[in-house]
Amino acid sequence: MKSNEAVILTIDNAVTRAEAKSELNATMLKLRTQYGFAPAKGISAEEMDQRCKDLVDATRAAVTQYVNTTGNAPDRMRNTAPYKTSKDFPAKKYEGLQAYANVPDDRLKRAPLHTAEAIGNLLNFNADYLLKAKHEAAVKARTRKEWQKAEYEYVEKSDYNLRDLYDDLMERMDATENYITAEEYRAERRKWKECGYYACDNRFPISKEHMRSHAFKQSGLKFRRPDTKYCSTECRKAQENALVRLKNTGTLLPEHAYEYILDDARENRAEKEVATSSEKMSKIADLP
Image (cartoon, rainbow, N blue to C red):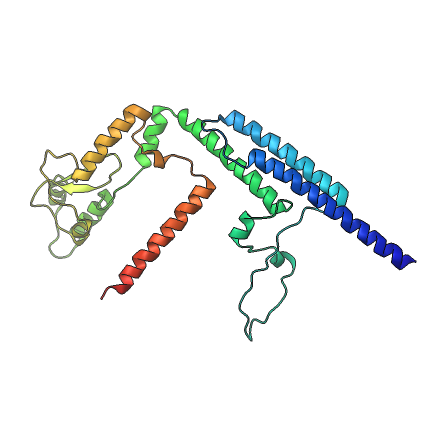
């Protein structure tokens, strides 16, 4: 008799769990339909914050109902990825945290709606847009002084900077042969000039009689006239473009230097960079 009651109870629990899972799945489908898409362009940080709060409240209510009904937390995805076995590493069952760790990203992105991972995906998706909205609001509120600090720290080119020049000259001063004096050091410093492009740290020679170290030769820089402001034509054009941006946006910086990159876009960029690196490595490997 007791065994029959146990079987009936087990069946009832299974039915209840299945019904609760189906209800949670349906609720999450509605929430994903409502919140699983990018918000309107230009949404304010306050509006995005309210959207996230509404989603959190709805998600919490759905999960709470599921837990109260079943006595368990929503399902979690398990690590079912196969791995090669050997004598030293025989086949085994994943146990404890190993059962849930290292689930492939493609499976996590396609997690069933009733799982904790799917719920987390939806929350993270909206949280990412909230951070983006707050970042954009902070960018708009930056003062010119704050922009100047960011511009000072932003560097695009540093092929032969002041530190490189200083190290070369100090090496010559400390040498036991063909060394230079303090006066010669000061004279040599006057033969070099700082590039006028705000994002370039290069020092370039404005005298044909300048020092030619190995480090300088590797930089690719060349002698330029004393009245030249830039180390290259590219830097001159880049500064002209930066001044146009300053009028339009209030900063010399290009947009990519301060824009917020969403998680998905960041992953896509990383994949492209890896592919490009692999192609470059293959070309290098094929060289004679």
